[in-house]
Image (cartoon, rainbow, N blue to C red; front, side, top):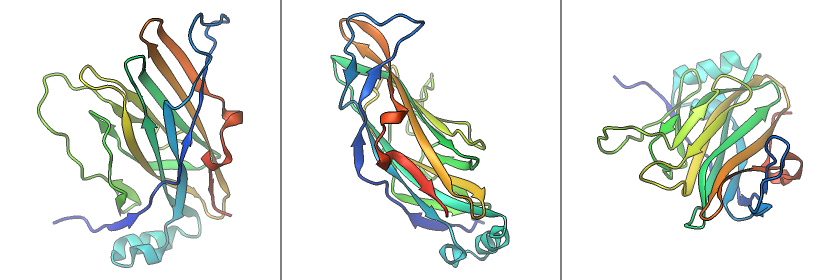
Length: 226
C-alpha cells in the first residue's frame, strides 16, 4: 500500500549570472589564470512556500501533522536551481553550493544523489513528516558508480550540494534543487548562498574560484517567515 502524500509545484525564480573570482590559495596568487569568470554558473533565485494544513487537505495524516506542529514549528518548501556551463577551454571540474540558514534546519533535500545532471520536474511530492519523496530512477547498470550530484549536511543549518564532472560527462546543464526547511514557529529565516568551484583551463591547469558572498545579488538571499 502506497504512503499518502501531497504534490505541490514550486518553481525557482529568474536565473542570476554569478561571476566567479579567482581564489588565492596558501597566500600566493595563482599565475596566468583569468581573475574572474562570467557565464559559467547561473543560479535560479530561491523561492520558499510555507506549508499549511490547506496544502495537505487530501492527506489527512500530513494535514494533522502540520496542524500539530504549528505552535512550535513552521515548514517551508524551498526551490532553487543551478545551471553550469563547461566547454573545451574552461571546464568546471566540481562545484559546491551551500545555504547558511540562521538557526533553521534542512529536513529533507532533493536530489540526494544523481549519477548525472538531470533536469527534474517542478512537482514535489511530500509525505509525513514533511519529507520530499523522489520518484526519479537511475538508468542503466554500471560497474563503477560516480556521483555527479550529492546532497550534504541534511539535518543541519548548512545544507549543501556538491557537483562533479564524471569520467563520462562534463559538469554542464541545469540542476533543480529542492528542500524542506523546518524553523521555529514565527521565526524570520534568512539564508545566504555560498558558491565555490574548481575550473580546469585547457592550457593552464586547475584553479579555484568562488563567488564573493558580499557581492551576491539580493535575489539570491533566501527570506522566509515573519
